Image (cartoon, rainbow, N blue to C red; front, side, top):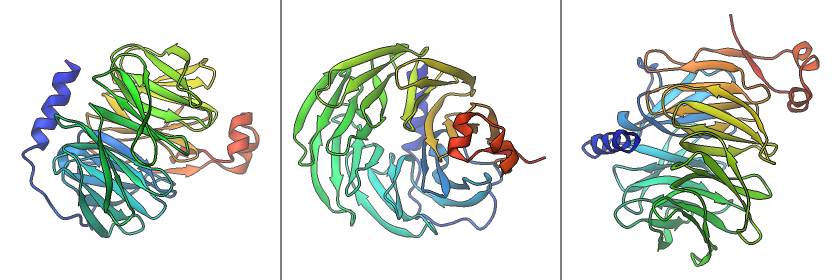
Length: 339
């Protein structure tokens, strides 16, 4: 059922026409759109890929308000390079480069067939494409291709500072590439790996075909842990102290980096995209909702859906921070809904 649902979204996008990115001057009357696959943070704003609506929504991370909407053909994964947002255009076989501060179009560049993940390694842009013959492409900041290498069915990518790790969904493994595109490691994980994240020490892989995530050593790729998180884990990331997993049955899971369960929260829909803004967790699903959770407690901050933009909220005051948990005090950040 899950694979059939995803196929419907992809087939729908295949018939959508290309439109040049342009900022919308009015609020999106249907919130952030339908079928969210990617979420990214640029240091001030959250960007959400509205796959079946051919657009990117830019929301203020400070209060959830709509900043702008940009037209993009079938957007999926996104990555921020410090100045620009790079967007994988699944239905156009390209990546789009947008200037983050104002959404200005900086370029559109060809990559592999059906690109769906983008990674910035600190210098270069990496794009994972999942056509009949999957591939990973490395681009310079001006969009020029440096090389393309075959990877059977790439989905997620993460960088350990030197090499890039790519989940290979059909092969049930992770492929590790160096800067020149040479394979320097291939590691078996669980069934149908999707998302992957680096916590500064280890790589974490979401095995979407099972009910677990795998932890790998970045030294030699050895499996250092396998942890149950519930069925269909998809999106995964680490903000250093904790690992967050979005399950496609509608649940958000929080773990310590030793694999201890800290909590689960109902998200609804089929959450796939996850991002962290330094204080809050943003989770997007394929049914048109974006939910915001406090990182320190997991409590719901706000909801955006296809009927309305995000509710706005305000920063927690000093008194609330002073009386909060040690984790909250350390971050000095957090938000509550405005009333």
